[in-house]
Length: 318
Image (cartoon, rainbow, N blue to C red; front, side, top):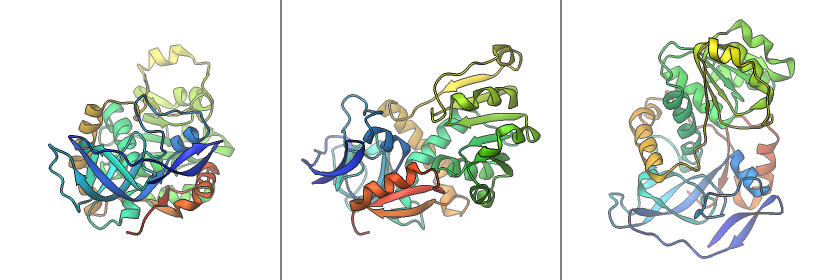
């Protein structure tokens, strides 16, 4: 089969052996795969897959089941999307059947490819680890990103007002259309967010450069979930603020979690998140679609930090 692998900092098409479908797995004929920042890092040699995981790129996909391993209740022909530790940017992928969900009602396979990773990330970090309660205030850095756009919609659906930091006025307007109350353009500084503080939960993919401001803006018993290091890995903090406000600082990754953990997370998405697509409260933000033969252009587009929502690679006809 054909697949995309990182080579010299770029995604490149290769020919490789199709994976085998074991007990408890399903084989998916991939139609589309979402592009995530982790794919950019892996292609650049900065984020190797966990031990035992395929080095083919792709942490999420959508397609049609073509084979079902022993012990699975899925059927050949089911239209599904899947959360992956790797391997999604290929003509076929085999995955733990518990990490697969049906394509939400009303979504195309191209749209469905844009939702597993970002909604799993948003739900895990804001609602599970962040323990967000209705009415609590949320700050989402990189609010127009895939994870940010998913988190905005979830916060609105679950009755928690949220604010964002973004890169431009156009992206701020995009976030407000999705349901954000407001926010700031990062080039003008984060200090403008203090007008909306204190926040109960902050979701931060930036890291060091935002750390001191995050600490200042969190309220009593605030939860600060760090999911990335785009702004560096080392910061100096006033730990007295951490103690006096009883702040929880939580570091979080998803890709390296156990199969059992991901299975429980996907079960929660099936119960708490997927029904909201049918009611129109959530929408897939597959804003830019590239043929997978144009993967290098798609990766460059995501790296530009100008994308609203998700970039998707189309691998086969729907």
